[in-house]
Length: 308
Image 1 (cartoon, rainbow, N blue to C red):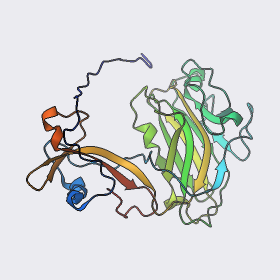
Image 2: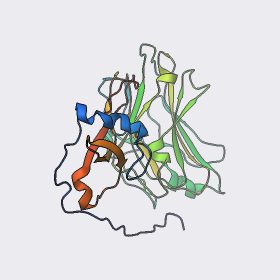
Image 3: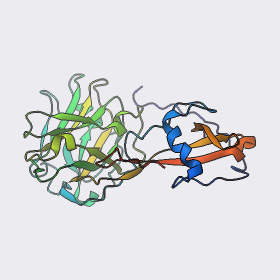
Image 4: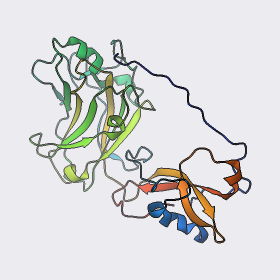
């Protein structure tokens, strides 16, 4: 049945004292801890796994550069799109992107978007309501296209926006054109597309940041396209809400938390023999564990080593 839920109880084992001889979380590696950095790519060890991988979504990265282009959708109305924006759907589809400042009236609405400028409205593709309007089981699609944006003076470009999305067999994309919309480069929004069905973003709003330098940098005729697709279920899902779009240049170094784990230490020189993402460790091993957090550079120069 559409949007049915299976609830299950998950038992978590905890222990009373995390460490008898606590090691500090690593912020800057000392000489004795330097092996942990090299071990990121090579450790396989006491608790299994291969290596700690960088977050795919850069959700912890914080943009510090001032935006050179912004859109808060304040010029939209209940019957018209914001100035300069257009929307396209397949022939025969009833319903499209629209401006709103209240939650969808549909049965499966996901509420209002708590964006920075929510008081002047946001854009929504209401997959639930659109799906109910279709005379047959057509694929649901909707493209929201920006006016031209001049990025000629910018050698790097980060696209950011605030959103709320709940998934049910649908996908979201940010497409970017540098020739006014003739051709497009697709940037899948992995934070949405990788969720399981019926999942919703963990925060409202969820902040999405996508490095579009390869397509938009130094280009004078850039367009953005927010593209929704439901080619599987075809009778509607939930909603995708978008607001506060901005373009900024990337900082050379923009730190974010890439992963955290626990290293198992043994041997006379405290060699790092392996790592674990387990949330609980047997008490008898707790005095030989090193909790560690890794930082990654989501900025313009990702080759700079910032893992610690």
